[in-house]
Every structure is written in C-alpha cells, then in structure tokens.
Length: 163
Image 1 (cartoon, rainbow, N blue to C red):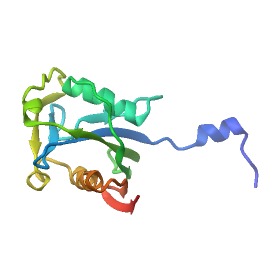
Image 2: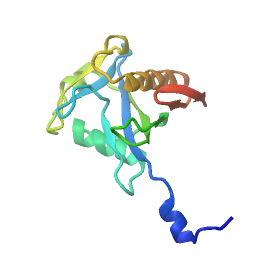
Image 3: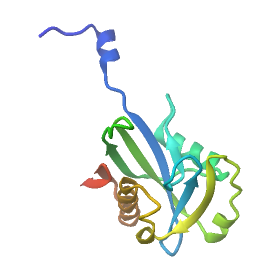
C-alpha cells in the first residue's frame, strides 16, 4: 500500500458541515422556536457553524444575532449525525442547553434579525406541522437529555447512544 504525502492526505480528508442550536425551555416544558423568513419550517435558535468557529461559540453567536441577548450556552444535549439528503451535504448538528426562559422574556424579545419573523414557546407534541421531522426528533432527544443530565448521540434525529 502506497501512502499519500501528508499534505495530500490532509487535503483528501472529508469535510462536514456543522450547525449549532440552543434549547430554551419554560417551566411548562415548552420549547422556544423561531420562525425563519427564508424557509417554511420553524427552528430552534441557531445556525451554521462558521469556518474556524467552535460549535458552542456559534450557538452563542446565533442566539445573540437572532434573539438579541447574550448568554453563555450550557452543556451539549445532542450531537446528531445528519446524512446527505441530496439537498444538503452530510453534517453534524449540535444542540446545547440554554436553560429556562419565561414567557415574559420571550414576549420582550426585540427581533431585529431579518432572518427571524417571530418566536414563541410551544409544546413539542403540538408542533409537528411546524418542524422538519428530523428536527422534531432531535428536539425530543434534547428535551430528554436536559431532563436526565445525559448526552444523546443521534443518527438523523434518532437516538443511538445515550451517554
């Protein structure tokens, strides 16, 4: 077997896209969702991880950009392997714990990011039509992890390893 020169080997390594989101919940176990202006389904606060940026830094940056407040993100709840779907390439999606948020805090959000139309607190059981199926699965896993103190590793939203 011939080995590639190191620089050529490094250039040949696969690149994966990454996204980072934050799970905020209220005392009624509702989750904070945002309505993007550029797609039909709702999301949690978050977005793409930029080149050279750590996922937890991206999560904090996205919350600041989308919701207008800056607070440290908590522990990771979910790491999800998302396969290539023909539209988007393979990637990893992280969800971090944002802690609790109140309805008053959500009502007071100053949504100035043109990417976000609105935000609200919702029970996961009633949001199926608002979310992509994989995000609904990933969010259910994140809520479970926030309750149990664990970390869930998922494949396309389906928990495969509980840590």
